[in-house]
Length: 243
Image (tube, rainbow, N blue to C red; front, top):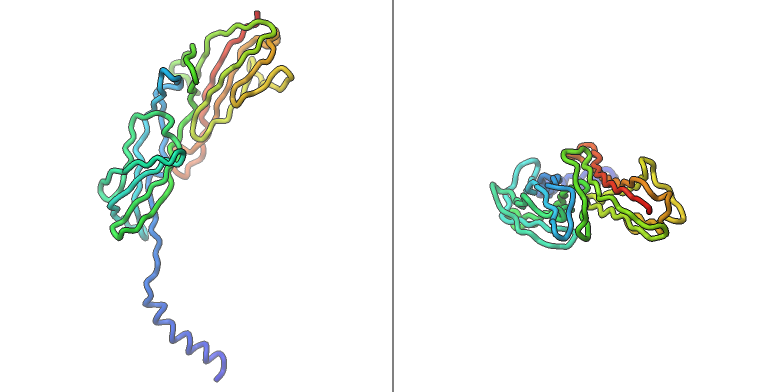
């Protein structure tokens, strides 16, 4: 018997099995995927917690475009592993947030259990535009309704030769990129300037260091899922005098 005939016989024998075998169809976890935290203010310190209004997260299950009810769900904050039980509503699971500390922003994993007792998971994210979270109380003020948001620090005076630290404690998700300007021009490197994280250090004050310093925090994220990334900025100005 020719080889081609043998192959034909073999194919005919296994074809019914292939046609009747149950196909494995993936179950997808769906949800709002990303939400944006809206800060109530852009200034925080140990005596003034920064809060934001945050939409609820939700997720559910879907198979071939059809909704599947879930019987349980929970959300895990990936930054610290903290687990939040979800609230069931119409076969979906919700994490109710509302007004919360801005530090809850970040990445989350949603896990749902469908009625067949199978566990499925997907990732979600809470975006946060740049804010300033100072490690101690400071004298600063926010310019009302400024766009981009604009914070102004109290005038600072320093003596010739002393060391001065200009803070820029930017917080956001994703983490903001920070740059420094002096009198409207990008601040270059010099032997008398160094950086500690986002903070600028003037090692030995001289007359040339007097002026207006601005740190700008900048991060980008889409305003809706699969949309283009939109830049978000925050300005923090500090006026320095050398005496």
